Image 1 (tube, helix red, strand yellow):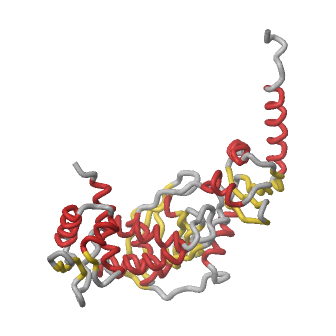
Image 2 (cartoon, rainbow, N blue to C red; image 1 turned 60 degrees about the horizontal axis):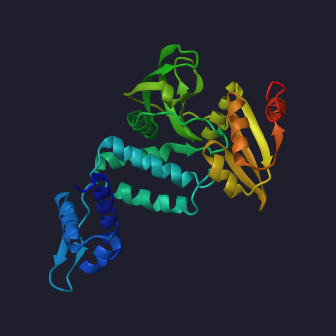
Image 3 (tube, rainbow, N blue to C red; image 1 turned 180 degrees about the vertical axis):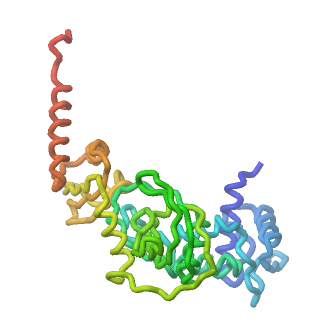
Length: 336
């Protein structure tokens, strides 16, 4: 039985090929997909069942093309999948400088996002476009190796629409200490800070500007009440969130110079750190951590000489671990 994941992937590839050329000879198109003409015909039928207007020319020199002048049907994904796809493409487009980023990924993601949004149903397109319009990227290094938090796509798009439409919202919010409260706010912007989402808004109960982590925010609902947008202090939503994060952070900011090419270091620990090239043989590594065990182990995985710039506590940890490792390699008095 044919693998469903492989079939779906191939069908998407087929659709992409049909969009890149006006007409494809059947034999050449089958070769591009590494399938038989019979399998190609089945895949064409799948696309037709989804509503894609594909014309076929029969015969030895026959082939396929999307119907000229026809609009593509709505993208066949549910709301959550559509938002997840758009968020992923948007993050890739904004994350060209992130560790491990693929060269050219930003430009390719922008093109892909434009195509995806174009074929979405109007209802979904409105939600996704709102998300892009009110999101402010704040860069990768702001939070370094912070873990990715789970955010409900419905929360994202509800708040994005409220930001765009200047509509007051109510939601439940859980503070760092676990206290849960109801909030009433005028949403301003969504901020993607490294791997974490925040809402910047004016808290009507506290009469002050606040930033809210979206993984702690639940059940947002528009009130139907519009407001006149206030001026955010400093005017930069990303800077506002970054300042708040820096003032409440209790972990360690780690900076290390590694005697190895940036590409090598990104390959080994790039998922958990920010790596910037100094020259061909050296790079600067930054990460954040609540405890120092992981940076010690992670830097050990690099397999290269390095110098700790900060914090001083990490230097002491390195010395302590180094001494214990050295003792572990000495012959034991009780051995033999």
